[in-house]
Length: 222
Length: 291
Image 1 (cartoon, rainbow over the protein chains, first blue to last red):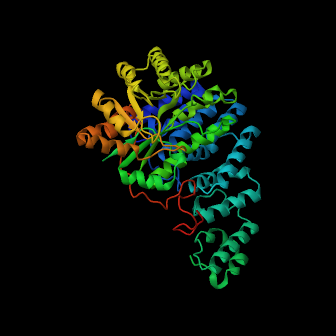
Image 2 (cartoon, rainbow over the protein chains, first blue to last red):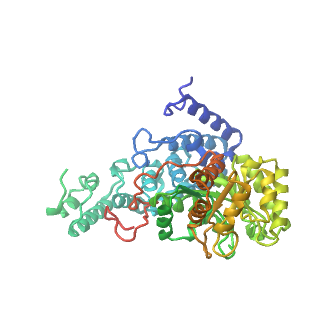
Image 3 (cartoon, each protein chain N blue to C red):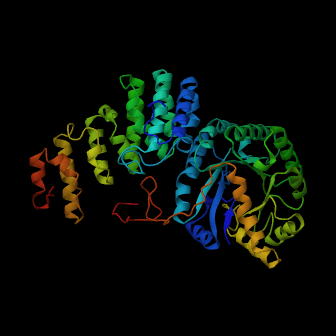
């Protein structure tokens, strides 16, 4: 048995995925119906993170679908690939959308068509209040394509909806004074309202002592 | 009484209805796609509708302890609208999804060439995706429409037991019974069948392959028509076993052929849960966020 798809527990599931990957390579349009059915036809459940909702990390069905996306990326030219990735997302339910977001990193975003679709889908995901989508988008390396303002807004959305900042791509390296100010403002607003301040603000504020100091007596301890 | 409503349009109903359905014993249902009471103007309206059937409505039903499944199709009436022909092109993406247990409602409204073309196309899709088919029979010229329906089903090569022919009455029951298809009866307050007429049909034809639905929608209809039929059956001397067969076993057997039915109890039926960050409660969430 090959080492491929070791994240799948059963030989039956590995064989099913292997057949579907071959199908997508031979006939890329098949992904339109294989992708939605992937959880049912291959595997579903918590992935390595143990989180069944896929906030803390990809679920099994996410990993299966990312393999299908990888096969697609090898089979289509950039413009066609960009169109199909957009279609999979727009026609997808929340689980399918989360998988597309988890799979954005397999796209060659050096190509402008693919960079454009990645930016569009990241923006859409971060506009929702769905923690599965917000988390998957924020964890993607393709957030490097976002301008500073959009990226900061994504980080703030994570704080707001309870997505752990520890899995957000760009934390702490990309954090800047403006993000630190936004995090401190958010923490102060919560403290004034008598509501708990998310511990995760520390992940940003500990690099910006002047903003952390604004919290004063409200400051949260590690 | 445990009830599976094989045809009910919950998108058009309220949370009071969900509570009443649960109270009546309804634990699972199928919501077929149909028209809205007024014409849609474009393909994207269908996409939003289908997205709701596999998404928000499914989630909403579970908050009330009911397993929601759906049937996806371009309905007969709107198959006549040239603006909507491309709906046929997006169907495969939906027919592949979990929670979609049939192609439907398909069939005839006015028996036009456009309706027949869409009907044939969707019968082929049902074969391709291994899904059962829910067929609507017309309000006008029902017997002739049903006869033509059975011809198309036979020509398609789909096994009869994978086809449910719905909205039947005394005039159409014999031909559908003979075809081997599953027989569906919509129990309505004014039109279609009443519980008492249904009991007479069951007395004559027996409970095999018979399913009963409320077809409740935005029109005057009764989501508890299935329960009322069960009660009328018991009053007429049918056994509890017969009632269970018509109201649960038969629809489960039919839609079970999709391999996609979920019938385990909804655990907890947590109404504070969220779908895409939004809950069925208004105002504050338990965790303090906005619903």
